[in-house]
Length: 392
Image 1 (cartoon, rainbow, N blue to C red):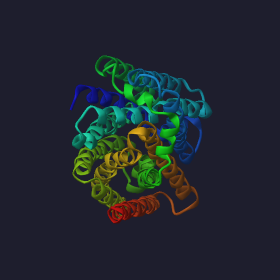
Image 2 (image 1 turned 30 degrees about the horizontal axis):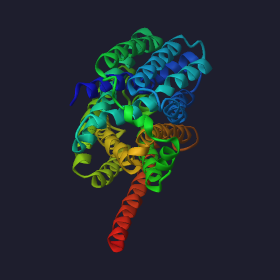
Image 3 (image 1 turned 30 degrees about the vertical axis):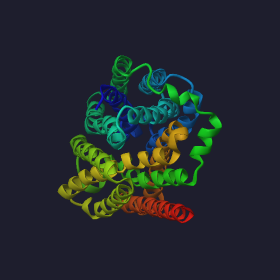
Image 4 (image 1 turned 180 degrees about the vertical axis):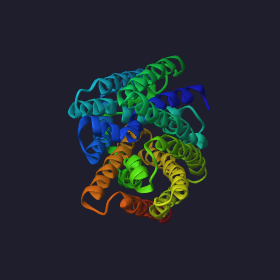
C-alpha cells in the first residue's frame, strides 16, 4: 500500500481510540459523575450522533478545500476535543466535549476513504479502505485495552490526555506523508450533483444496511464492561485483556472483509452481515461461561469488522464519482447512527427489558434487519441489469 494510505491509518488509529475508549471506562465514569451505567452509555450515543450531524455538514463546508488541509484541520479538532474531555468538570461538560471530538470523525473517515481509493488500482479499492480502517482496529486492539488499564491505574482523565497526545502524533504523520495535491479534482463537482448522487435509492439502501447492520455490534459492545463483570463474572482487571482479544478479532475481520469485497462485493455483503447476525445469536448462551464468552467475543470482532469495507465500498460505487465525497462521509455517519441506535436499544433493554444477558439477541435482530435490506438492494441490482438487457 502507498505510504499515504498508511498515514491515513495513523489518523484512523487516533480517532478510533477516542470513539471506543469510553467502553472500557464506563463504570469509572459513571461512579465519578454519579450517573447510572445506562446514562454513561449515552456518552457513546452522544458521540455517534455528533458524527451523524457533523459528517455531512463539515464535508459540505470543506468541499472546496484541499483534502490534506481538511484532514489536518479535523485532526486538530479531535485533539482539542480530547483535551476538553480530560478537563470536563461534570457529566454535561463531558458530553459536550465528546460531541466536539466527534465532529471530526465522520468527515475524516469519509474523506480518507476517497483519498485511499484514489491512490490504488480499482481492484484494490476495498483493501485500501480496509488498510485505513486498520487504524480503527488497532485502536480497539491496543488503544482501548491500554486506555482501560490506564483509567484503572491513574483515573479515566489520564486516558483522555493520552489520546490527545496520540492526536498530536497523528497530525504530524499526516502533515509529512499525505500528498498536498491529493483530491483536487473533487472540488469541481457542483453541489447539486453531489446531493442528487447521494439521494439515489441504492445509495439510501446502502446507508440503511450500514445503520442496521452495525447497530447490532454496539448494542453489545457499548456495555461490554458490565456484561463481562456482572453476567460472565470476570473482574474489572480482566476486561482489558479480553478487549485485547476482541480487538485482535477486529483486525482479522477488517483485512478479511476487504479481500472478500475485492473478489465480489455483493456476495461479501451477504456473507458478512449473515455471519455477524449468527455470531450475535451464539454469543447469548456463551456469556454464562468464561471461556466460551471470550471465544465468542473474538468471533464477534472478526464478524463485525468484516462488514466495514463492503458496506463503505457499496455506497461509494452506487454514488459514483460525483457523489463519492458526500456519500463516503454520510456512510460513516450511518455507521455512527447505528452505534447510537445500538447504545440506546441496549440501554432500553437493560433498564426496561430482560437486562444485560439479553443484549446479544436484541443485537442480532438489528443486524438481521440490515441483512434483509442488503438482500433487497442486491435484488434491485439484478432487476436493473435485466431491464438494461431487455432495452438493448
